[in-house]
Length: 94
Image 1 (tube, helix red, strand yellow):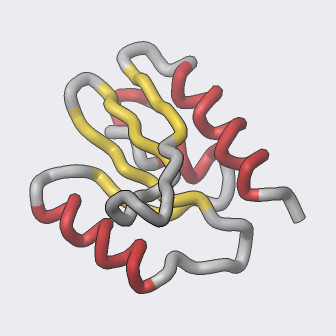
Image 2 (image 1 turned 180 degrees about the vertical axis):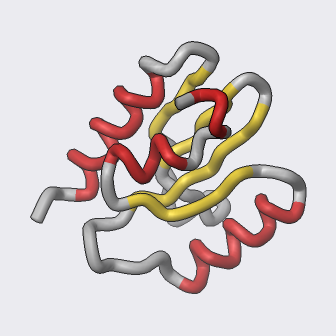
């Protein structure tokens, strides 16, 4: 099973190849706010994504964070592959 760090690295590299998209890894700490793995922007549309290994789910805290970001218009979700991460980009990107 691929490590989450490998999945994130490949997904970010693929997203950064899409014109108009910038993605980066967010490094959280116990002292900061709850955060997800990847922050991206595609032509002004913000995305906040959580990476998980296949078969694993986001924690309740991560789900709560995604609900808050969705409420203000951000695209949020969980991905387990590079393609799933790319699928979150608005359709005109792919």
